[in-house]
Length: 186
Image (cartoon, rainbow, N blue to C red; front, side, top):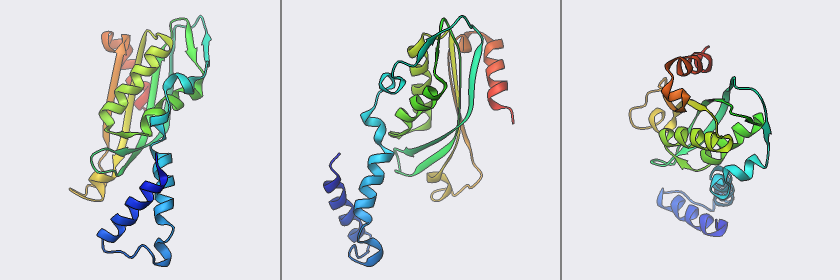
């Protein structure tokens, strides 16, 4: 990412919006925006294997593992506005488990890209399944989208829920129900 080019484009955008990029409050905005975009889209420079970094551990457990309420922030690819909420990830191990923080790190790889929630949910599930060859994986996301809240239909209380279930979470109704019940309990 070329920060200087993003700064130039941001400066041009400010002018097009009718602003003076040289006024006190905006002088450093192009540089701040370039740094913010580098951070918010930092997932393009990462892969799931690189953030897992070998934190896969052998286990005899075949029980369900769930991490709930992982905060998630991403940018809508349609409007470049944030969406944010909670992500719940569960899996059934087959001889290997992930270090617990690695679930959040896998999520961040994909959340820190321009996204739609539906694809993001699926990408997380696929990466978890592939990383440990899990028997099954489930991911549920509950997010609020600023593109729907602060523009367009302006619906402040709307929450979009998406799920992706793979393996036994898809084929076994009882496993899927157990995951959904535990992941979505209040």
